[in-house]
Length: 68
Image (cartoon, rainbow, N blue to C red; front, side, top):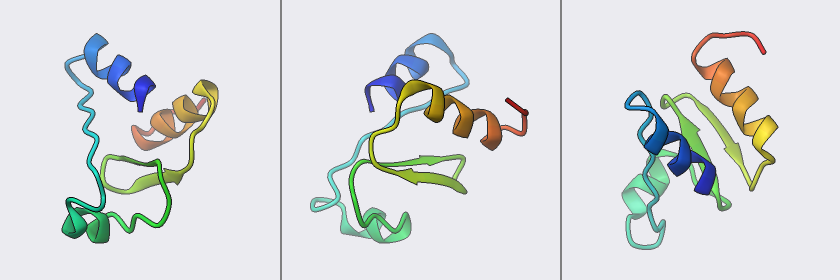
């Protein structure tokens, strides 16, 4: 979560939100949250758990269609 927010602060192209799944069950269902943290990128790329920076960046690059 911290890295996503850092990315959002650095680029106007990145938006980062954190929600509490118990407070927003409709969003938790929409994004199929079964474990936390769950990161969703561009609605279709997602991963469970805390990832090291290099792995998260690989997912981000994949989501925007760039090879790493």
